[in-house]
Image 1 (spheres, rainbow, N blue to C red):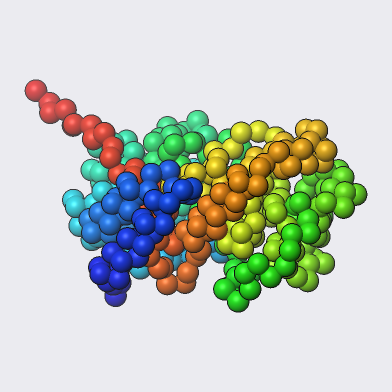
Image 2: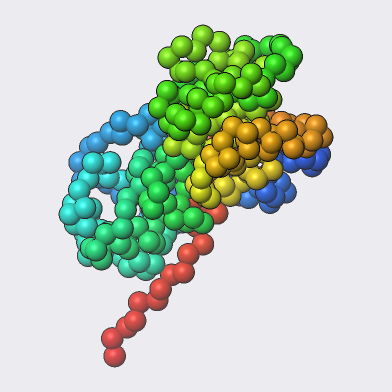
Length: 348
């Protein structure tokens, strides 16, 4: 049986975090609002989960972890009349036709969908769903909150409505054992490279002694490489799973991408624009180096502290803990609970 978090230890934790957030700089968009709302969420938030058509599992590890945590969550209610939001469970390999049938069934068999045309519903799709000519799937896509795994395929994410799950980093457990400030900074930037993404750009970086390029399969000391680098470089769409580890170790994340992105995890909570950098591949390694060197030591110190503080909310636990990744995703759902409920017209 799911249990709620003890109130007094949680309040103490919230007060400590609020005190830390009050000091400049803060990684939060609105520290005071965050912690007040978070406590209200723990006390009041209710989610009704529809019974799935048949049992299924998510092969994606972080989607599976979120889904299983949600099923065991104390936020769940068996009374749909007290629910703020409704969760629509379906297998990630569900076809468009089957998805349309699912929504049609909600429309016919349950009153809740029609009240808002699905605006108080949410669903989990690791890659996100695309637009469809089918009315039912289009309503699900445009109205309901989609939760996907970061990063999301272009066109499958609607900013200000949809949510992404922070990546799951299997090696995150080594962070607690890593000594702080174990080494002096030897590199301007560290890139953990998959050997394929933006290969020309990566090859340029390899030729510059200020950058350390580490091909994943050859990595022997990732923690050491992070600790000896000022900035940690990530190709958007490549391997982003180690971002949380890098941030926790005080390495400022630099996302290399050629277009604006709005699907970063916890966009409603964290000030990503102040704790990270977005840099285009245009201009190559030379331009990247200019951008990184333009960050003053004062600015860098603030970004480093904010990145480290923000990383605490990007951690996934098998059993959810206060203010961890699971609870922050739920918090973003809580912020979306206010929807317009369309009054059903009575026939005259």
